[in-house]
Every structure is written in C-alpha cells, then in structure tokens.
Image 1: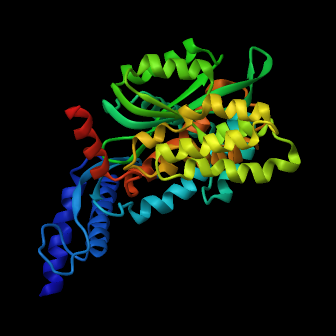
Image 2 (image 1 turned 60 degrees about the horizontal axis):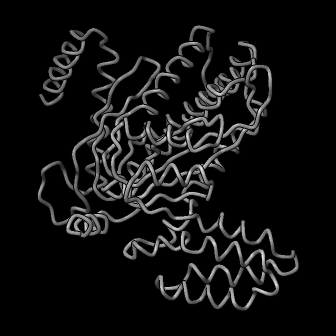
Length: 396
C-alpha cells in the first residue's frame, strides 16, 4: 500500500515537471534544493524553524548563486548559515573541474591554441568534446561575468580598504610593456572582505589613481576610515583628496623594504629584527618612543636608513588609531599577498599576455572565486567592533 502511495506521488511530481519548458532542468533544480536542505539540516542538527537543544547554528536567509550544468543554467537559492558559512557539496565539486576547464579555455585563447588541443585538454577533465562554438560561448559568458563583477554596486561604507598592484608583461599596440593592474579590497560593516576593484593602470599618476577611486564612488562608495597602501606619491595624494577624513596607513612591510635598502647586507637581519618591534608595541606612544630610541642609536651608522624611517614613521603608525582592530590586519597590505601569489602562479605560464583585456578576464575570474569564498567565511573583523567604532565616529 505504501509502495502504491509513493508511486502515485512520484507520478504526480513527474507530471508537474513535464509541464515545465525544460522538464529535466526543472527536476535537477528541484533535486539540488532538496539536497541543500538535507545538507544544511545535518550541518545545523535541526530542521528549518525547528526548536532543538542540539541545534549548532542558525540560518540567515538565502543568496542567489548561478549554477552552470551540462543541462543548462539554473539559479539556486543557497541557504546562508550565520557561523561557518555554507557551500553545497555539489557546487564545490563542480567548481574544481569547471574552474580547471575555464582555465584551460582561457589559456588556450590567450596562447592561440588550436581547437583540437582544447578538446584534448577538455577530455582529460572528463568532458568528451568541446566545439568552437562552445569555446566561444564560454569566453562570452566569462566576459559577461567579469564585467558584472567589476561594475556591481558597492556599499556606502568600507571601514578599511587595501590597495596594491600586480605587474605583468602585456602586449599593447605591438609593444610588450610592463603594466600595472590595481586590486582594491575592503571590509564592509558586516566585517566581511570584498574585492572592490580590478583596474588596469596605464600610468601611475595622481590622475589615474583619482580615476580609480572615482569609479568606486560612482558604484556607491562614500566613506572609508582607513586606507592601506604603499607610499606612491600619486596614490597617497589621490586617497586624501578622494576620501576626506580618511586616514592613510603606510604599509609597514613596504616601508621596511624602503628602509632596509639603505642598510649593508651584513647588518640587515639584525636591524630588521629591531625595526619590526616598532609596530609590535602596545600603543602609539610606545611605538613612537621606541622608534625615536632606534633612530638615536643608528643615526651615525645608517644615516640614510634612519632618515627614511624618521620621514615615514608617522604614516606607518596610523593603525594605532583603531586599537580595537587586530593590528596585523590593518598595518600592511598582506591581505592581498595570497591573492597575488595565486594569480602569479597561474599567469606565469602565459608569459606575455596578448592584451590587457585577456589579463583582466583571467585574474578577475580568480578574484570572483575568492570573493565567493570570503562571503561564506567567518568575519575578517568582528562586526561588533566595527559597529562600536561607527557609533563613536557618529557621536564625535
């Protein structure tokens, strides 16, 4: 009897799907949502809306995620989990192979690889064949996703932003040039990291940096509390003019490199160890006092290094103005280092890029993946800390 009842229910369900424009795709979408519900329930040890003493977490709405399959594209409503985040297992598994395929296709396009070789590489990923039209379609969709990502609306406030550049050999008007692409990351008021911009820089000037920040402001950005970067004069000037009231933190890692250039090789290690202690002090006054003692001690031995330290010291201590935030996170641009390493690891196989567009498309795809991971990961800076600072600033 139970078997007959289940069969009837299944038949009703199948008839419902048959009424859809694409029955197989509709069935797949239904199955994906069912699998997500089961997976989230197991993760939280409780069903949706269920009161349970064994519950280990809570839902926080849903987010839309495009999911490309062999049957077609579906848009999933992926449950959001407050602590620890959630990414469906089938999206994670697909992501590996699809990301590899996209990488193959991109590199094939960039290097002018034949369609036959693309097909051979695709088969190694478990895909039987890929036609020239499919290659073209993948490239078109990638370009569309990249443009949507680079031009998406931004929040009005990012308490901290980090700016750094990647340099690659790119062919431009039949010449091979070393060109810069600036990556801007930020932390929103929820404490989550975001990639805010990926922009080519044909010349490093105040005007070009101002154009970069103008683009961010057009997309919605209004307020920045602290900007972290190296000490390029045009960049620093553009930050101060574009974001009135924003503090500028000179990246301590870049700053140390600038100082150590003027120290003999045999003394670099010992002097660097003492130099690091400036930014490890518990507060601004202690850091300033320690630096002054260091300047006094080494002024005669390393006059040029000490001059660079004295001139840039104040700008390298601005993170102390936010004592509630972990100093390691806002005193340098190290947040971008992992991104840069991953991008360089992949871009070095290309060598010389045929155009800036091809390079932007490649690195943007990797940054989109990171952005998705950051969205579901834990807060980089605790939301409560940022809200406390915001209240203090509003009251001032």
